[in-house]
Amino acid sequence: MQNDTTAATQQPPIKLASLKKTFRLFRYVKPYWAQFALGLLFLLVSSLAGLALPKLLGNLVDPKSSEQLFKGMNLAGVLLVAVLVGQSVFSFFRIILFVNVTERTLATLRQTVYSHLIKLPMKFFLERRVGELSSRISSDISLLQETFTTTLAEFIRQMIIIIGGVVILLITSPGLTAFMLATLPAMMVAAVFFGKFIRRFSKQVQEQVAAANTVVEETLQGILNVKAFANEFFEIARYRKRTNEAARTGMKGGKYRGAFSSFIILGIFGALVAVIWRGVAMGMPTSALLSFVLYSLFIGGSVAGLAEVYTNLQKSIGATEHLLEILDEPAEDITPVTTIAPENQLDGQISFRDISFHYPSRPDLTIMDSVSFDVYADQKVALVGPSGAGKSTIVSLLLRLYDPVSGHILFDGKDSKSFPLSELRSQMAVVPQDVFLFGDTIAENIAYGKPDATVAEMEAAARQANAWEFIQRFPLGLDTVVGERGIQLSGGQRQRIAIARAVLKNPRILILDEATSALDSESEKLVQDALDKLMEGRTSLVIAHRLATVRQADKIIVLDKGRIVEEGTHNELIGLDGLYRTLSDMQFAS
Image (cartoon, rainbow, N blue to C red; front, top):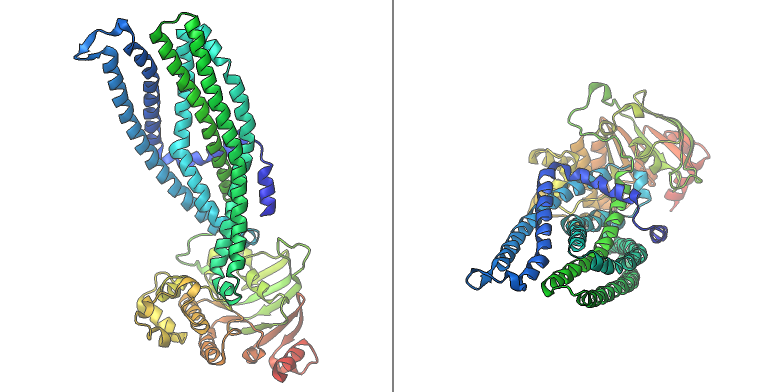
């Protein structure tokens, strides 16, 4: 995060390249272009109508225009009322159109970003934190909402007022206009100067707020650990530190915005006094001078307003860059799986051929080194070895969460890369040690293995997983809400829900990653019985620390430091004076 923050502080002011990136977002406006164009037309009409107000106000006090049109009202007064009513009506419909287009556009953008995010490979998530990514979808898109609904309209309106007002003033009095415009260059230089600092601090605040959100996300996800270690006040202090950093940065940026606004106000009123003095000295009529002063105020107010627009544009460009960083990341080739083509259906045979691997974030640390082994269809193979030996990495490689640095993984003699990724993964299921349950009902969690499953199918899967006994004891049965990450269920219950999910998926290849290591004896017996049923008739890979659970495996592969050091059945390996026997003696001696 520190690196991101530092990079944020070094961003230059708005440049053409940054604007081009921002304009990429207008592809999401394209389906609603007709409404957007109509909104722009209403904005143009209401802005031009606004330019008529100073002239009409000048006419209102002009003795030559005092003839009555209606009782108590002259022509200028009637036109003023008509312009104000028309401007109000056009502004009303412009806002409605812009809001409708913005809401639809941002809904599409949120869906696009989330859809792309969830398809990104695992290496992307290794380098990002959950809170940071959540902030991108929520906070950054909210900034764009303000840009589409308000900032863009304000920018166009103010530019019309500035350009149109200057043209009208030049027609009215070129000499006085030149005098008035002499004050603008100083304000424009100040805008560029202060804008650089405002952009830097606003983007830095976004980064620090994302860091604070990360603390909240991690704390709430790990609330059990926070409570168990009595670290509530530690986390409160950590969050306070992050938010105070964001506040200090925001306040520092606020000083620059305040100084800029003060300078602009001083410049506007100073210019106003100078224009009135100069106009009187030139002998301008009162009505013409009033119109001229009002146009000058309109132009000065718009120039001052551009500072705020500029700040908001900087924020939206920063948000756009963050979102486009996600959208520019290459996604996995994921496709919906309705049926699996016959040529892609797995029989269950697996081969590793000289597999070497290191994680993308740690190229200096070799996890697997020239690993080769075969697993035949319907075979039960156990992977054992010390922590860090590479057992769980084999699971990640099988699922193609990562691809090996060298070597080949074969399924039924075909390279894993020749299978469509979604079809390959849909024929495998993993029951991990740390089961993740969604905070919805038991039914929704079981049906995650088969979203269109019937209640009867879910009940049958729960029975096979030895889960139906405790499910039916709940008053709501399958409709029982499990809470965040399944916190309302015990470890054994969560494990059996995960097994039911795998049963429902009916995978050809089953992977059990330390599935019983964190359970008590009673729960382990129930879970192990469910796993034994689940492993029947399919290829199974079992990662285990407890060697008692793998004695009946058809083959045991012993790994150490990323290499296979032994391979055979329990009886064959126990007869050797090797690592497996050492591990076995240590466990059963204790």
